[in-house]
Length: 332
Image (cartoon, rainbow, N blue to C red):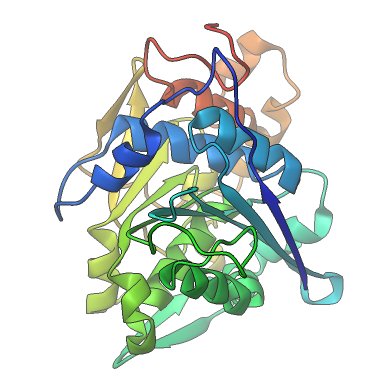
C-alpha cells in the first residue's frame, strides 16, 4: 500500500477556474433530490480525468480549479497476480469543509487492468440487512484501498488536515463528493454503496452529497435493495452516446444494470435520459469499437460505438460550461 500527501499551490490568473468553488460545493446538492449541477459536473469530471496522473499533477489541477492550498492524498495498491490496480485520490479543501474522493479508471496500456475489468464473476456484498450482486473485478479493486480511504475521511471528520494529520483545519468535513471515470466510476458507486449500507460509516454517509461518474461501466445486478435506491438518488452518470464502455460488460458475461440518473450528451448539451443505457448483447460490436480508435476521424464517426469517445478529455471538454477557462488556462 502506498500513500502520498501533497498540498496544492496558490494559482495566479487566469486561474482559478472557479473563484468561489468551496462555497459552490458546500451549497451543491444540499437539498436531497435536486438535479445535476453543471459546475459540480465539470469540476468532478476534470478531477476524474486527471486521476490518471500522479499526485503532483492532481494537486496542481485542483489548485487551478479553485481549491488552492488544498490537501491531496493518493492511496494506491497494486497486486498484479490478483488483478488489483486500485488508486484513489482524497482531496480536502483548505478550510476542511469539502472533500472530493476520486477513483482512477482503467489505464489504457495496462493489460492487467483490462483483465480485471473482464473479471465479471459473481460476487455478493452484504450491506446491513441487504445483499447486492456486484461485478467481481471492480469490487476487488475498491476493497483494496477502501480501508485507508475510510481512515482519511475519518481524519477529515475530526477536522484534521490530510496534508499533515498533526494539524487541524478550520472546520470538519461537511460535504463529500465521490467521482470517477470508467472503472473509476464503478469504484465510486461501489464505495458509496458500502458507506451508505454499513451502519458504522453513518457519519461519512450523512455528508455524502453526490456521486458523479463519467463513462461508467455496468456495476451491479438485480434485485436492487433499499441501499441501492438510496445511493441511486444521489448518482449522476454521464454518457457520451457512442462510448461503448457504459454498456459493458456484455450480457453473455453476466447480467448487470445501472443505478441513478443518466445524462447523455445530445447536440452539445447534457440532457437527462428517460431510460438508462442497456447492456450490450452483441459481442461483435466490441472489436469494431476498438478498431475505430485507430481509424481516420471520418470513419471513426461513422462507427456505432467507438473507444475513442470514451477518453476522459472528451468528457472534460463536453462538461466545461461556456465562459469558463480550461484547466490549461486558455479559452479554447
